[in-house]
Amino acid sequence: MEHLITLLQSSHVDILLGVLSVFYSFANRSNEIDKQSIQIKEKLFNRLVYLAQCGTPVNLSYKMSSDQRLLWIQIRLRSLSILILSSAASQVKCLLHDNLTEELIEILHLSDAASVVCFVSLS
Image (cartoon, rainbow, N blue to C red):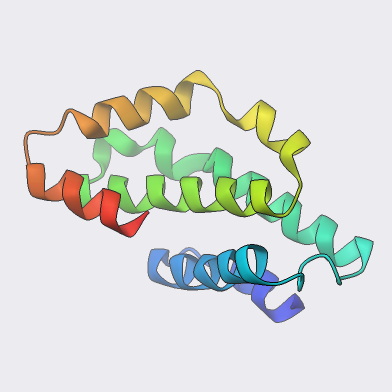
């Protein structure tokens, strides 16, 4: 589990999405996360909160392609989903802020319908 948490520090979007998919499966289909020690869960939840807030990449979104922005929003949503499924909902409340809402609205207004369909299917 610690190795997976370490991989969540990657700057490669594909790695992040892959590891988040594993954690999503753990949270959705098993009690694997619940079985972990408090320290491990704290590390995981802290990293998920960071990814849900999405740090520097989203702040630079005006320099990103639409595809990159979609991937970072997918990372944010997947992180939020894992937190909710892992009963860390108290940490989620502060993450559902205007920035995420604005980003989602902006993405959904893209003229490229294929990008939106791709985004929704990946989420």
